[in-house]
Length: 384
Image: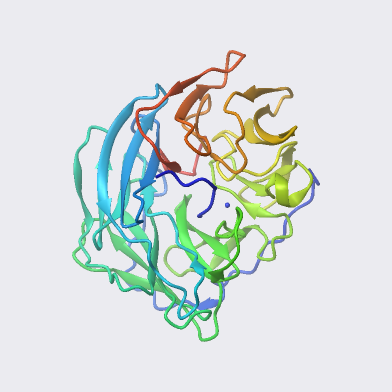
């Protein structure tokens, strides 16, 4: 069953604030022995997007890799329960997507382990674990572009709203978790989780709350990204702000990060593009969608109002745009496969489609898979 609303994970030409070098609201532990990724990733596999399609009970999902030609390259089925509770509260939790990508593979949580899927259908085990599957635990992870290491944050909600978190760096294929580089201190109520790697540094999503209540999009999207040293967890840059001054932040790309508000909640159809220093260098006149920014930053997919519906519009940095014919697409799932092809998972029963960004009028090709876009291959954030 496809998730209907985007979630997570999430111009006024001014620089966004950059925090100090320390890890976010926690204490770095000894970095001795922490493995490091290769700063320059090796050549990528065929470009693709990873779709996640949860079953009706939320106890398993199907992972599909979809190419720019709308072909399903490979699939895998995983057992993973989304049943973690926010302590004694009847509320949702910040539950990161169970998928990460390198330049060659998709990695996914399955029955207490992290496994990998290649585009030729081969599978393997990246971390045997076993991970603790108790109801209070959630996990977020990111594998380095060169498949060398995995950053894994364990988020324990047993005493929510106070969180206990432990961030480790482990070699892919290791039998046990590696060095802990970050842990939370008492009283911490903000969640972080790995989302990628940029020039050898780890990129952590930050969300200022733990338990979510109510409805609508954005409840579990990131408020900002912390770029931290993968050995010490010292913070090097903040993309966006920890107070949501520029809005929510979307999926990171080599060109930067979109920052804005969903059209219904923010009022103004405007989304900034933040570079990897945290500065705002451009903007697009459309509402926020997490996966809207192209890898090279030259195009953006966002919501624009159109009568009783929220249209999906492709905007180009050099000017101009085009309607994407998918009907009402408020907070729908979008993600770029490469700089000229993107995938749309429409709301309701709409089929997943792949579009080329030219020529116009745009025409989509249906995909023989369902799901919500969660990550792209290659996963490197170092170059468009």
